[in-house]
Length: 278
Image (tube, rainbow, N blue to C red):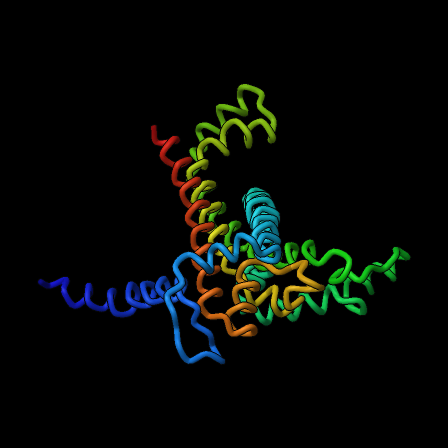
């Protein structure tokens, strides 16, 4: 009985809206136009599976998550954490401040900054021009690469902080024993440090994957999903269908698919954690 108020609040503010959204996904609800809503079963999901734009969005979402989170944020975060562990205190404080400043920025602000960096008359082309290198219209010729790099720039701080905390827990006795045995820096990292922090790596991968799946404001501010549909990830596609094309039912079905993609990634990471425990 003491937990009853908490359970009621969870049902009212969490489970209730989720259940209502699940119901919307099986209807033809529209934001404008028809005032009558019909139950259409799996029609929205069938429509999505036969929609080339939806397939394109799924592929771009996987590319964005793998490129910017699994490879970009994870690798740079680990590299920065390792380098910061050996850096002097002033260097560590300055670097940490710069990296964390990008992380605390709202997505829209970070998106405008990255747009100013990558657009045709932006900072990146000014630097390339000053070095005598050819300029590019990055947001037109390589838009998915530009948004991936923007997400790496914004989100690396989280991985860096997670790995910095994990590296502090690596027993120095193991590192010193490896040094006595003649192991170099790369061998100590590969054979000692990474095996010790492998659970942290898996947990960090799961968290940044789920964060990246939900990225909307950064991409929308930089490209609006364009040019064409070349940066139209699932959150962008869902927004366009639900609020620009007024297809609330179809947009909600896409949201459920996005939830399923996140669940698949989470299941893989949890399976890896379980295998490590066994």
